[in-house]
Image 1 (cartoon, one colour):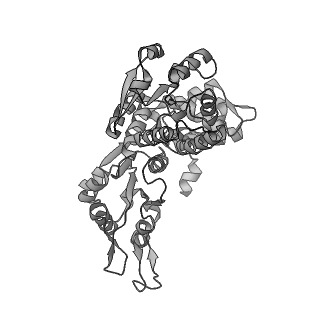
Image 2 (cartoon, helix red, strand yellow):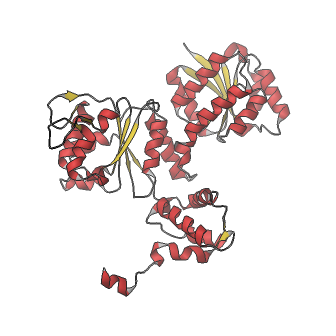
Image 3 (cartoon, helix red, strand yellow):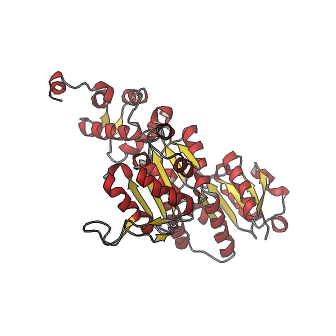
Amino acid sequence: MLTRACLFSKDKEIIELCKRLESFNIHFAFFCDLQEINKIEPIKKFSFALIDAGLIDYATASSVIEDIIFHFKKIPVVVISRKSSVYIGIEYFRRGFNGFVEFPCSISFLFRRIQKILQSYPFHISVEQEKERLESDLCIVANSFDSFLGESEIVKQMKNNLLRFAETEFPVFLYGETGTGKNLLASAIWKHSARKDKQFLWENLGSIPTNLAASTLFGTTVGSYTDARNYPGLFEAAEHGTVFLDEIECASLDVQKGLLCISENMECKRIGTHKTYKPDVRIISACNVNLRQLVKEKKFREDLFYRLTWLPVRVPTLRERISDIPILVDSILQKTNKGISENALQRLMSYTWPGNVRELFTCIRRASVLCDGSKIELSDIKCNLSNDYEPSPELCTEL
């Protein structure tokens, strides 16, 4: 059944997301100014209205909000906002709006949210019920892509791509330098996928001894080796869920054979048996080296490489998004009740950060402990940066 709606927004990303709802049989008419409200007849044309919070102010524009609610009095009016908090959502709800959606969000999330609003309208929803709903939805966002802090263009583009990739069932491959936040993004992909209510199991292949990697991933049967037990592997335990394989480059060639069977035919077997099972899982993998180079060196299977990299995403280094450093620093300092001087912040923004965000977090936490006052000064952070540290000749001799 075709649903028609109207969107009031100047935000290109919001407009693009709503255009993609056509695949769910929701067709939008687009307006860039609230003054155009009087030109349309909502009852005859539209099932609901979606209004960008960037065009209104829930705190001051009372007359504008009243006009909107009055004009659309017989259809639900939903606010979509880049500011995500329970307080803001409840305030819109108190003012008469019928729903609140936080942006950015996936197309499937927006569709489900609209469905719930249409199903509940015109039934009355209490403020407490709406608060509970918002807390639940915003909890998902807080633990997903919004927790990857950054407002630079390169980060925004990466998040937009990942939101689209998360909706699919295809394998996602995250690659980039160590310390850039690949683990955080893997969890966010799971949170935005259709499998978010199922298992999310993670394994770092670089931390498993080579002789235990196969049994850890694929499982074992009694008698396959001394003291072996019937043990479900990672893929069997994650049935219907998501498996994240970090440092995929560390997988041995034998383990790669097993991963190829899973990624190609969704078939797996425990060690010590010929009986196969078909795990229903989605694979997310990550790598911090040039995996294509390992393929050329015959250290990584080429066929597995192409199976895992259907949807590749490069996670940017911190030096590529220097403008995000103030946001990251502020996030860390909120937990320490410390401030930072302008000179110290400029020093941080002029450094290359080979350890990326992980190194920045370590540097700020250490500086917050070392500083004597309420602000981190330049002298507090200078000794923490790796290019300012030189081991003593005595230490080099001992090493």
